[in-house]
Image 1 (tube, rainbow, N blue to C red):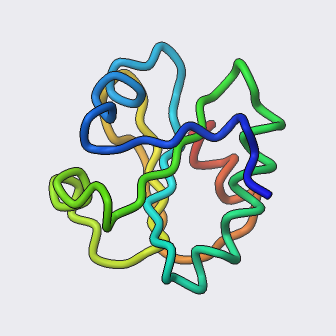
Image 2: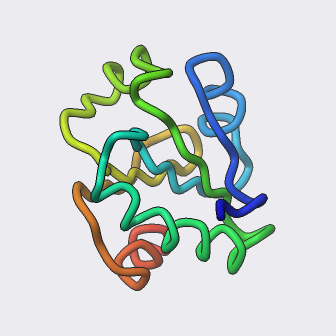
Length: 107
């Protein structure tokens, strides 16, 4: 089950929720049809629960938010990006482990 601490972001609220965030944001670009995305999802959900108040964790469905996916050059899912101060600071494509995501956030 998805964490209530994961923010669902789309073309309409990406700027407000991610780019204008006061804290670093981990954004999981995903799709409902994507098998590897389903494998990564529980890891992302746990991070959202673990770092409440320190970081934001968001998910973007690339099919529902194609303008945002295009803007950030998403060609493969899952793609995880970290944004700090409105700028992309890190990126990882594919399934990964919790520690890798934490290092992206803290890097």
